[in-house]
Length: 300
Image (cartoon, rainbow, N blue to C red; front, side):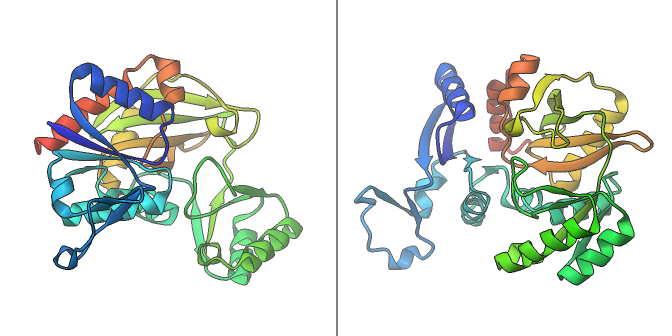
């Protein structure tokens, strides 16, 4: 058993995973994604394996691994690395297809809707004018989000028409093509918290409340974590959400709506788990190694 761990920076989570691998005697290599050059046309290869700190990677380099674990911090960097590895026949956690869906809020919501997994009302517009009409139709307040992004960055609550017009104009002037997709979501008066579940396949490894006085309940924005008890409805919606996007090592974010109950808000395909581990005592790194072994054996 040998694991290739692709990383951008050794954070808390990567340190925990590396320590667990070492303690269990699992062979592994650390692969810095800032140094990799993937050779997609090896028939033209003329590079040495390493030159000036850059590693030129041919398919056989990764075919030595039973499974590769993606811990890239940048979504597109991780996604394209996984797409290359999957094209070479390398098993990965997660699969590129899963990361492509979960890393894009539009695709996540579409997958949840296709599989009848409850989620907040969401509408997509392609122009500021259409977005303003959609916002007015939904009623204030409305939440606007970038379709790609994490840690609650560039997420905004729009309280009135003046704010909507200003924010939509700002996004249009920014010019990046991703800002031309207006992802609009109803604002839900959640009870000062949301729920984050860490999953590996169908197993729920941990569940926490993320509580904050701010409406964005994200630990990266200062929310505090406490254990969340599981009930049958929460387990069901988490497993259905994971299956809807293809499964894997995922963080499922759930909102409690006063009338409709649990709604899946977002799914993270490269979870940070410091808050979950600290609050619940779950041994997530060792659970992850167990899951990697399952994937490597073709059982998951």
